[in-house]
Image (cartoon, rainbow, N blue to C red; front, side, top):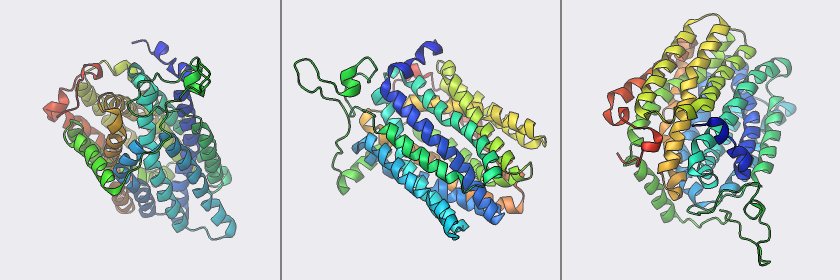
Length: 442
């Protein structure tokens, strides 16, 4: 597989370019916001229990993502992306406004965080559902790599920058940057043309003016642009039927046993995220926190960049090997007291996560029908992160009692569990390479 040639899909496909750049811009603000929000909670309280509560309130909406699935499959994906960005741009301004009025408290921050997260539960499945509609099947791994690169690459740079900016200007100021990024992303998303589910039209390219811009076709009539801008009506009974269809697909597929690994690993990692500010404070303050979170994002970035090198390998054995390396490196990182060593090992530990994320996404997008994809992606997102909020809340409590280092280290045990579980379950251990998979049926 020639990665350098396939990556030209970003140049060929105008819609993918808008989606990637829109995600890049909004994630720049999100990265700064995520670091600023967690540090602001820690700065206002000095307690891991409160950062655990902040993590719980931010992650809990992820468990509700399954209920967004039927809406994503019925509503205009472009409108979802544009409107959620605009609402989020207004929401995050509440923090600097409260600070200006002298009424800022930890409870104001804890109110805004879950609202922003709740809106993101529409954004992520909408972006995932849009990808197979705007790129050819052969480009799915590359397209998902590009989206992951835009996400993790920005995280890596802006997580580190956020730590420096917090130390220089304070966390509150960074919320203004986030608001601007949401507005810019909305402006990029508004130009997206996403074909409706089931359309056979080729993805818009810079050389296909009728598809990309809706130019006048031969004969003088306006050329129709296949798009999903007409929202389907969805009554209560239809909504429930759609919800059951998405959950039913997951229940009858190999995705269900795969979700067990997410429940355990994400529960333990939730505790790690919650106590990371306390862990980092002992190693240098907000700058150290930004660097550690940048290391995690950087590792996932590298994994996403090289994922296409691994997509020809049998997925089951590949998963075992990846997460065995990941868990071992994570535990080694926590045991090292030298900050640069911890940063290097955390980067190594998260490379396998980036590889696995991209290939898993491509498998789902390849084998799930377009008209079910939003519901299935939302169901997988909800179920895989179901334990993360609980892990965050418990991790915060344990961080104050047994120490943040122990709780962060437990994240490595969660990663090792993934390798052990896949190895122990024959149906997962024997999963072939993506191009050899014909169905997700259990």
